[in-house]
Image (cartoon, each protein chain N blue to C red):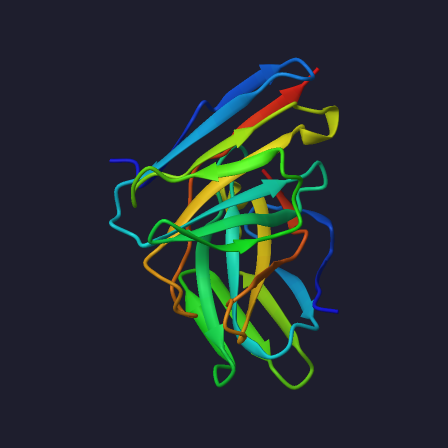
Length: 113
Length: 114
């Protein structure tokens, strides 16, 4: 069964601190993995995309890693800012003809001053 | 210059009513989607349209029907609304079906059935 699980479910950190969000998936055959940021009341916005051959990718203060062997990904946020408060969703696409998207339940990050 | 826009943003209605949510994208994309986000914030795909043809139809009740008058629009019609339909519905679009193509999401429509 294709699944995407994220941890932790919620996280509260102080402004300026770093944090790491985890994503484990069982989707097969694997095509790519995206991390989305969803602000309250808004639609998700893509942060990074990673394919099978990519181990790490950065987008500003966001760094995503992918271990395709263990089927794990992480999103590391450096020097957090109040505006980082949002839900972060891991989305895995399979390689079937339908290119199905499998969404994780997200991690709710709250950055406090 | 909103890329994917949905209306209304909020919708409160009684059980048994029929309602529609509109979605428009000005990105020239070929594929549009409808997602349902439940109370646990889990996003689940409902429909996908590519060049006006339904290509994905997940196991949603047939009370839900997508209507695409043209490539830039994909509206969601819901008949005989039930309490369990309360959720946030997101419209999205992508340039096509390519695996690396990003889906761009609208801001969501919060539907509350009372």
